[in-house]
Image 1 (spheres, rainbow, N blue to C red):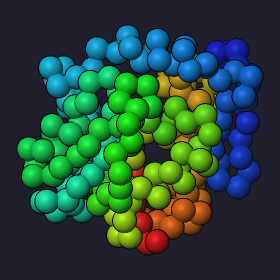
Image 2 (image 1 turned 180 degrees about the horizontal axis):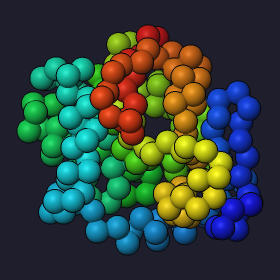
Image 3 (image 1 turned 120 degrees about the vertical axis):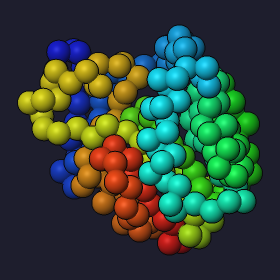
Image 4 (image 1 turned 30 degrees about the vertical axis):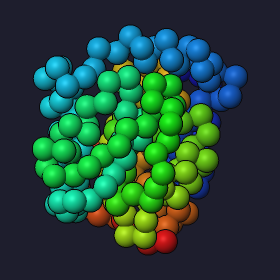
Length: 196
């Protein structure tokens, strides 16, 4: 147990650190928390934050590609940044934009989303299945460093953050779901290309 008074488990194979089921927030609690976010295209700090993922992924994307912002929140913003680069990007969020557009997609962004997965294996499978062969996946999340640091890590204090990743976790994900690694140049942006 850490200072947030919830138990976590650590996977010995992939190094995913995740909250025990009894400490997962309810859907109503999650939605209420996300509804308080003031993020949107009007927020320069949020736009700059998202640009990290866009900047890292752009070398691997081409004009005319069609993509999906997976977990866009209540006010889609990433799609506007990508439109300025000649990229079409649909929006999906299970709470605020629940109609999942039909794939397959050339690319998928999951920015500050994967740490919210209650059932990570199912969600990663869903994302992989939404991509065409050769499709790009851009994931932005803060990797955890070590268990001592984790106990007081601010990123883990958000009660809706329930899954925490290491580079080893992403190596396992790539092998399990059929991805090759792509260079991102940013330690919190993980880029992959579908091989299936």
